[in-house]
Length: 532
Image (cartoon, rainbow, N blue to C red; front, side):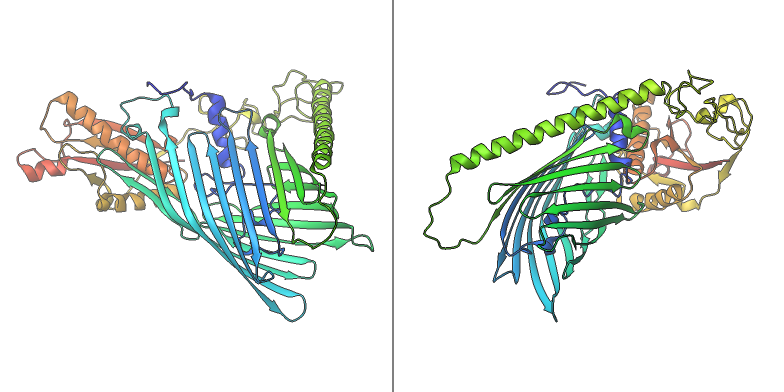
């Protein structure tokens, strides 16, 4: 495939990178709202109700980079501006975001509006709504693939949709509780052309956050805030963050965070000059894969335009401010370098003490050459729970004796699943291989069936009528199969559970005698099998 710039080969490293990006910690289909670290410093990134909440004008610039060690990785750039009006009764804001993940790009521009309600003493409720445009693109030029694949013919897929977010925030003294619904409209990005059909759902998300600020000193200059953020989207498990934030008034902050089944985070922030702040966060992966992908960084730059106070004093000399900023930044990066060196040293010492990384020190390990991270016993030797001669780390069925040729699992029994007659085929126009609206309705039922039964395998047979030569009809049957397969995989059916078989004109369901009989033969037929 010829491309406009240097090709990106689909290597094992690249595929592992995409897997980590989309599957940790949430599923691909559901997780589309980016995972950021310093949202407790800049809450407007998620909640439009926080526009103008400090009765100030704020500007923040954030860059979040994940999985730097893999080809492409994920890079998020975010700019937020917000201001208070009428002494904070109203708030307005602007969010600009660019989210790049390999061949995917999501760019958004959103305007926010918030309204403050006061109840009794110290009870404050803020309501917020943001609306704007979301531009979603997939650049197939970055993939080396078969150029005859009809799904890759349109290699500049893009869609722009109206998007909206809803937010609520409640404050009582030092307690804060927020609720946000990003992608409120649950838009579907869909493109239906003569050559292919693509579909992508912008799933509605639900975010619940809260924390309490404990004051540790009488002059209120030192405080600790436990802060929790929970995320949920349809077809995705609940994901949550725990944060412990230590703040020194007008000096800065330090935070430790835990993102469930994913990473530990360190965050350091400084207040510089009069109104400027800078923050840096670094995530350390805690899963086995996280040991190789702990290159997650986020940088935050913020500036607050405080209300002017009339004074006869001259303005501060900016040269001194710039010099102070340079000095503080230099010291900060020295600390970051020292932290990185200490982490590398700890990792090297751990490797020397336990060469095969099985958790048993080399001095006590009776099997020191075990592959890294194998499941081992107290002597450091691999475990075979079911006694079938295949160690648990390589056994797909570790509790059931099985065959080596079947990855340690018993021989599977094939059972054909009966399907309603109306679902057995989808039909195509003469010489065409795009889906009709009626056909997509049938496929929605099959998608639901496949996603609810993990042991099902779908076999698809592609057929044509007898008009044209054998080669042309074989190619047409293949294109029809690929069109259906792409629709299924884009809607959550795993590719490895779909088998396609092109037949061309060789197996007509009825004799090709007239236009009606030929229309019946232009089809993709479905069979579902269960393997237990």
